[in-house]
Image (cartoon, rainbow, N blue to C red; front, side):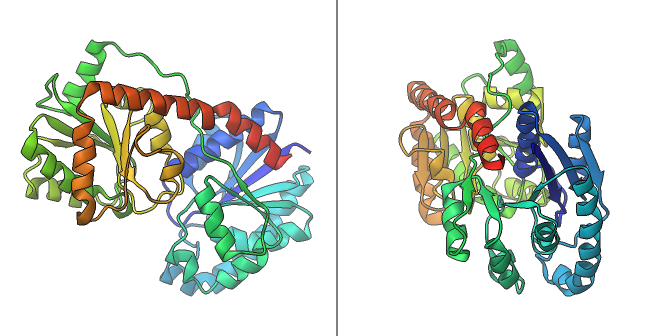
Length: 386
């Protein structure tokens, strides 16, 4: 039957790339006549599903995912509650003729999977988060490995597939579903519209400025302090370089302090969380995009950047090299440490030339349409869940 139940009880609720792709998956499957429903404790995902006319059931489990010391301490108690909740909800959806379920977080993978298999569900596990200490040093890793033999993994990159095979070598059912973005048609903004947008975000904007963009969660793994170090080196050679950072996150106050400490107030600007038309204008106005993460399971903002024909300078971490091909649609550096700061400076300086940016940008757009189109995403998703 064409149906899918999606379950997600995150440790921390936020709207990010995984949530965006989860909603997109529901939309493309609905177009293929699937019935998709959501069970979640994430208010952002719940509201987004309701807004798009999906049925979403909101559950009260918050901060119980066993990925921190405190949540692990209380997990024996929450596991009992989850187990009985699993029977209630999975029986409820079973009566609604659902027979496929996608689990996205560790607690439902461990607890709900047992009940789902007993009830005859086809079980999928989505793996989007970088696999680090939260799993590798987790005392529940043995349960994860055992249950993984009976499910199908869905992950966005070949890099993540390799990582999962190292952890769960007995599981051969690992499907790669590269992320996609819903709006492939690039809106055209007039020079006046772009200028008005930039004047609002950059108080000292000049037409000759080279604009570097970053969009994403303001968290430590995104390498934002490295970006500021690179900017410090760049403006020694050229004052007309500006960095615009779009996004919010736990490091915002620290980043503002670092900007002031490095005297970058005239060159680095935080413009908050952007969406809709504002985000489209952001990508349209950029000359190039940067992402110096410690690890990326895929990098949805990279797709957005190359879809707008923008060259990218990024770290060769995780699945970034599956999107950015060195010297074709951007440049890759090995790490976001001081050792490689000069390499980043060199590549960004090279992209000051408009012809080079246009050449790499067009190649990026070509790669985007060939490998990461919405049609390709839809076909692969339908094949996985069929």
